[in-house]
Image (spheres, rainbow, N blue to C red):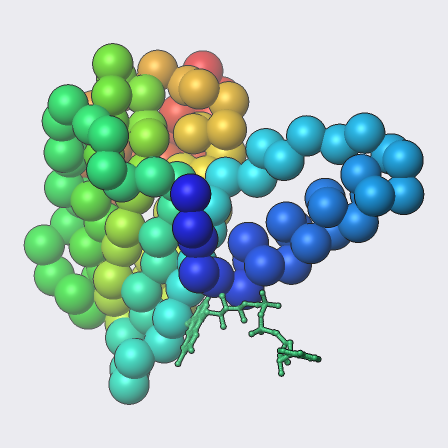
Amino acid sequence: MRLESYQHAQNHGICAGKNIAGVKTEYTSIPWMWSDQFNLNLQLTGICDEYDEIIERGNDINNGVIYFFLKNNKIRGACGVGVIGKVGRDIRITSKLSEKNTIVDKQILSDQNLKLNKLMQK
Ligand SMILES: Cc1cc2nc3c(=O)[nH]c(=O)nc-3n(C[C@H](O)[C@H](O)[C@H](O)COP(=O)(O)OP(=O)(O)OC[C@H]3O[C@@H](n4cnc5c(N)ncnc54)[C@H](O)[C@@H]3O)c2cc1C
């Protein structure tokens, strides 16, 4: 897989370096990237090409909009866009949910009034 992002370039390099130095290390980082485009911040996590359901969170770019890509009720990936500062926290939590293979409550994912970290406590 080819991933063109700073985070991947950094962590993949660290992992390769460790293995070259004899420290056996598996590369397990959940892909993540962000980009600022004018006043908007775009963030992606995970892999968004293998899913059986898409859940939308929010519908106003001023408050941030995130699309979650689910397979078997687990988050495979997500992408979000919003005014700077509006999607970063939720995308960070999403990465952790994806890493832990958490089965998610879609009601919480889709309702911007419900905090995503409620899913972490389950
Ligand atoms: C326009 C643009 C926008 C981007 N925006 C984003 C973004 O918003 N978010 C994000 O996460 N990623 C973004 N990326 C992707 C990100 O920049 C790259 O994935 C990342 O920099 C790759 O890091 P790297 O260390 O593998 O390679 P590079 O950063 O390309 O580093 C390779 C280095 O090797 C040097 N080099 C090449 N050949 C030789 C040689 N023969 N001898 C010595 N030195 C050599 C080069 O000069 C360079 O300094 C963007 C890329 C581009 C082009």
